[in-house]
Image (cartoon, rainbow, N blue to C red; front, side):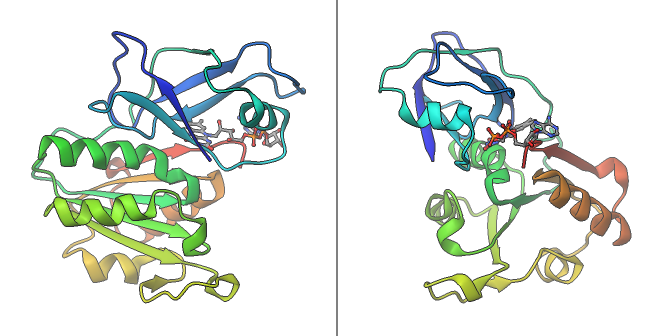
Length: 222
Ligand SMILES: Cc1cc2nc3c(=O)[nH]c(=O)nc-3n(C[C@H](O)[C@H](O)[C@H](O)COP(=O)(O)OP(=O)(O)OC[C@H]3O[C@@H](n4cnc5c(N)ncnc54)[C@H](O)[C@@H]3O)c2cc1C
């Protein structure tokens, strides 16, 4: 589910950053409290701030879903260094697991808007196409930005009602090699649940990628 907020005047952020969002006087709360960290899924050029989250049965998310339009929330300044590197001669390879797409959604939208010279490869892993947030937007960005490749893969098509002609199975060395000339050279960014991030990091290191070229954003709580 995605949530849109009016962008406070003067609020600044770099694509890929996150914020701490606090619910003020929520209808209910539990021991995990009223604060969650969310990556900003919209890009700085957009008028609104957008967040997307996998809805689960927690007091925070039940409250977020229930509160009326126009509800005021508290938001701290944007934080984090999970942002695109400066040297555009080095391609960026993004590995997203499910809702881990949010920081990349911001980065690729802004790169498209700025006509950024970086070559960007987004590998996006989901169980089924119907589970994949922002899928169509990302597909369309591939059409408008010649520097952007979007490679989606599905890991559980047996549970899907849709037809799928793209990649299947987890992101692995063979899949990366199919789209990248050389696995060594790009800067890699991994975002998703901690288990996925750890698995992808191990796979990259075993494939000869330098640890210094790997950046990660772990979505703790999944
Ligand atoms: C930098 C960053 C960016 C994020 N961006 C997003 C985003 O864009 N979208 C999104 O949906 N989520 C994002 N998350 C995760 C988000 O903050 C929540 O943790 C997640 O949505 C789960 O919230 P919940 O209310 O469903 O479960 P919770 O009530 O938070 O908890 C679920 C389970 O996880 C455990 N848990 C909670 N926090 C931690 C922790 N820090 N370490 C270990 N276990 C924990 C709890 O004990 C519980 O068992 C991000 C996290 C980080 C750190």
